[in-house]
Length: 75
Image 1 (cartoon, one colour):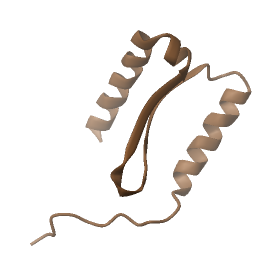
Image 2 (cartoon, helix red, strand yellow; image 1 turned 180 degrees about the vertical axis):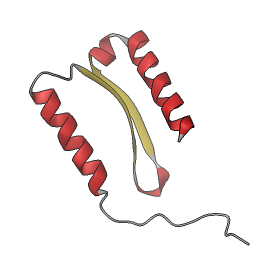
Image 3 (cartoon, helix red, strand yellow; image 1 turned 90 degrees about the horizontal axis):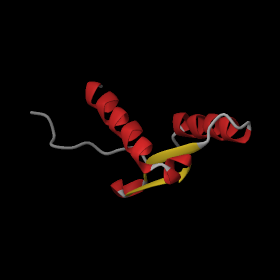
Image 4 (cartoon, one colour; image 1 turned 180 degrees about the horizontal axis):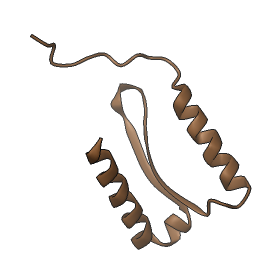
């Protein structure tokens, strides 16, 4: 019988850091003009927000987020 849940390690997520550094580099070079995001904190708390062009153009941002939802659903 499998346990109903599993504990998530309370360590640094190196892939998260690498992803954010890559996004920051792209934003600084002008390649990224907006972002819509959600971020998971410890204890499964999370935030959602948008900045830049994604904040100014919520219809486009919602389309991007829908695509993200589809991608995550395929995993």
